[in-house]
Amino acid sequence: MMKILKLSIIICLISCTFSCAKNEEVRDNVFRGIYQGANQEQEMQRTDDPSLIQEDRPLTYDQYKKEREKILQTHDEDDEQQQ
Image (cartoon, rainbow, N blue to C red; front, side, top):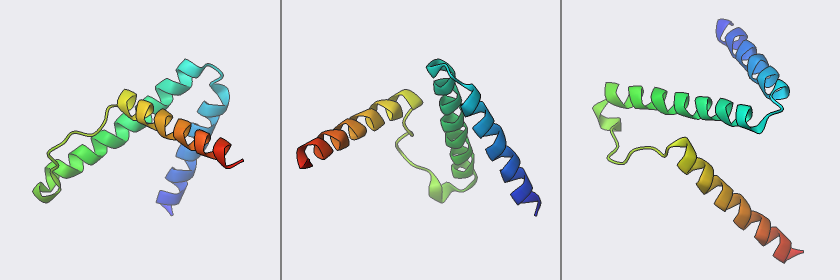
């Protein structure tokens, strides 16, 4: 029950932040924080369990953003060709 309450509060705070963030730079910083927080949590889990250690490092937010933009651009081009 507490997990559901905590999750609901987090979702409300995130949605409020996104709706209030009209500036693209602010939104980017929020996304960057979420991405880096998730990576840190995964890294902590990996160090606790040696079987989960990976040789390659996860992408930085900027690398992730560039890869995502390439994928979305390719997807948009494919959609245009199909029409």
